[in-house]
Structures are given as C-alpha cells and as structure tokens.
Length: 74
Image (tube, rainbow, N blue to C red):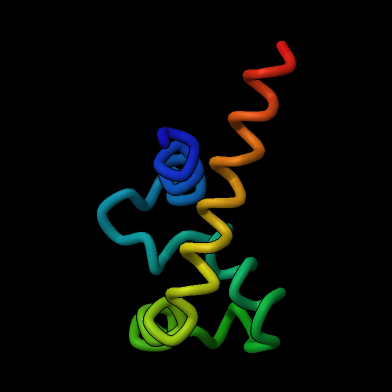
C-alpha cells in the first residue's frame, strides 16, 4: 500500500505542503480535464480532486496493483 503514497510524495516534489502548486499535478489535471494549467487556481485544483475523488482513488489503487505485480515478478 506504499505505492500510492510514494506516487503522491513524488508528484508533489517541491510542493509537499502546497500540492496545488505542483507543476506535475497541474499538468496532469490539464491532461485529464482540458483546463489550462497556467490558469488553474487553488480552488480549481482542490475542486478537481473533490469532484474526481473516486477516479483518483481508483488510479491510486491501480498504481498499487502495478507495484505489487512488479515486486512479484522480480
């Protein structure tokens, strides 16, 4: 279950206490939602995570399954 935490830790590098400022997360939101990363505000980022929370949790669980498969095969 450490894989999702590792992803979040790496995705917010440089912005641990303010993840909404993370360029990586802004880019991912832009890719997923189509909103321009340069125009995203704190409320946009937090609102996106709130409205997409189930998809985000599903994504984190997918990361966990991938990590388990990698560890199992090595």
